[in-house]
Image 1 (cartoon, rainbow, N blue to C red):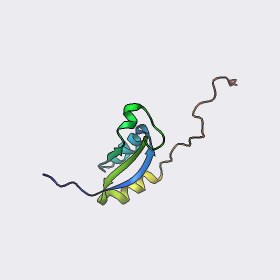
Image 2 (tube, one colour):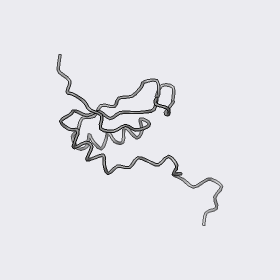
Image 3 (tube, helix red, strand yellow):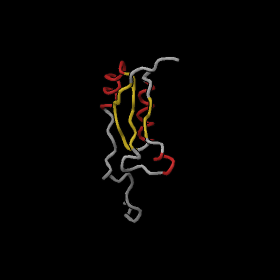
Image 4 (cartoon, rainbow, N blue to C red):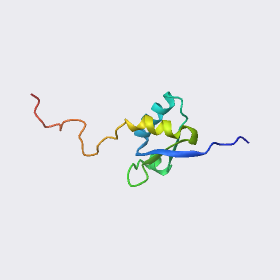
Length: 91
């Protein structure tokens, strides 16, 4: 049986979509990533209150590089509306 490297969490986020974006950035730089999350969240469709939390795990040897790469990535502000309300007038 092959040994698994020691893994550390470099970032926690809400939802698989955001976690997959982080994962793709790290993997593009050659850093292996394991997403750790509660399986009930995606199955039931719950993405809040802990069930939607995803931990990005990387080998200890890549931890510093992964943290540096993710430092410039801002998590979306939940208060911010991505689109204007449907009833707003367009100028």
